[in-house]
Image 1 (cartoon, protein in one colour):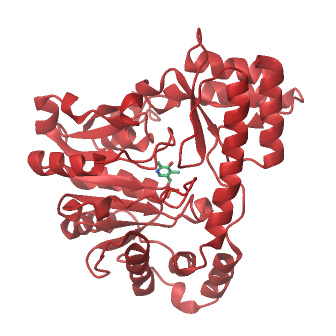
Image 2: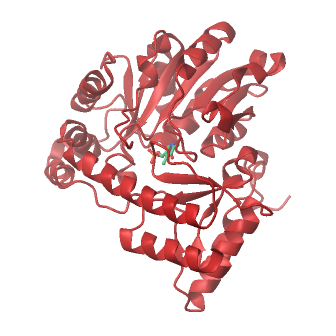
Length: 389
Ligand SMILES: *Cc1c(COP(=O)(O)O)cnc(C)c1O
């Protein structure tokens, strides 16, 4: 073994599938080609001004300069409780049912270490956010993929799980509105998950990164509003996407008090909490006017319509879905996810994400992110129409 060889757990993580594509993009840019990147899901508009102003004031307040309380500032926990009551009609006890997280990603990863031992399994939506499978691997456990079925509105068919998986599973990761498919939760699915969790003693982790980012009048529910949800699960709520705050690392875990407490216990060993100025900025975001969110959603909806329209014109059968910042579409006949992404890059100098990046069930699809300016998105779809039409 060489002295720089990483541990087995790190070697077990599959190589980043996007790396080859990224290299091609870098080569093209180096050759002076104007590449438009529709791969990354990261809001292009700045954080709302009232949040930035609250942060400026909070940074100037010395009470935020010490180590943060790992349980979170009272104001932030209380405002998360208020937000959940107002927005989702869910009652949260700020004392025992909520802890700030340094982004949803940290929370998902640490939940794996809090709940998974070697030999245990996590059930993971496929296609899905990569930490649902990477987290369990790093924790020395395994995962079982839950293929999202287009015919079921991109819910998994829970009846297909085998007895051994159900016996060994300790966590289930679900996410609606869903990245990468843009689907919203099908009627009755959260209820089914609560039933499964009860019967097989599996802790539900609902990744709520997109509840505020929805279109066409759709309002996304919290998983915790499902009867019985708090007995079997937690929700990870992130301010990253809905409040244009990806850089701020501002999120929280809410729900089952015992599970929240175990997460907290693990976390006190790993990090020292979320900068309290960020927590106060989070309060401003949660309590601020909703007009800004509505404006963002109008912008994304317009871009979605633009992209869907252009794709349909070049023969891609794509549906308009009601949530997230992505369009998820089938690749044209004769292509794999990767070969189509390469073609689009080669012909149109546009980067799209191959669906296979998000798991085996993403094969045959590609993802376009709506977080680029209207002008660039228009230019990208023009190029695709011109070169692939
Ligand atoms: C973007 C995204 C997150 C990111 O959350 P952070 O709070 O920025 O770490 C989590 N889950 C999904 C499904 C996402 O798409």
